[in-house]
Image (cartoon, rainbow, N blue to C red):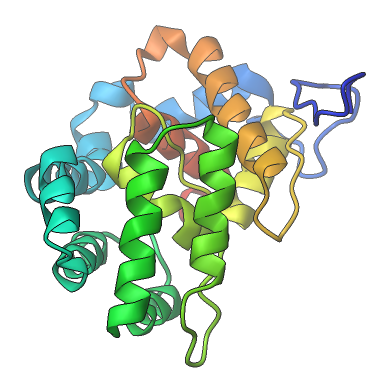
Length: 238
């Protein structure tokens, strides 16, 4: 904590990563990324494997649920159509686990759940107020959605729609992968399993650190930064 009681997230090499090896620290993590994608963020394989489907989801969101479309659907109280579009766009990605996708579909199936989801999502993306306030209200909205079997409030489900809708501003969090990547990178990622602003703001700080350190690779947005982090922490790239 700093003097104001805020969580501090920093790049730190005071301790060697538990899984230390060739690919640790900013330089080592860059080497690992380039081992798989020699052309960096412009590599054709990178675009096909990591970027394209995420960007396509964002493009579809802009087409079907941009600010004007969302406002029109909210004005006409067509909450179930708005929720249906959001769920359908996300379903074409592999960002959420199947149990999270099912929990979301169940939560917004009824009119009450759809209305709460849509109003909360609109305020999170386009409402007024500080990022922290809007994030915390969005977490409360997701936590209060109807639940059938599986809990709805998970880090991936909470962060996926901001990431798809506004990849220039919001980041997607897969906890285990991100924690492992932060360890390899040497970044002090302050994580708590219950969604909270300190962890999310620390995630944004991690992304910003990667953006600065890897500026030679010319990351375009959070999609590139999330993909870089994914390569460091995912078993797919071991």
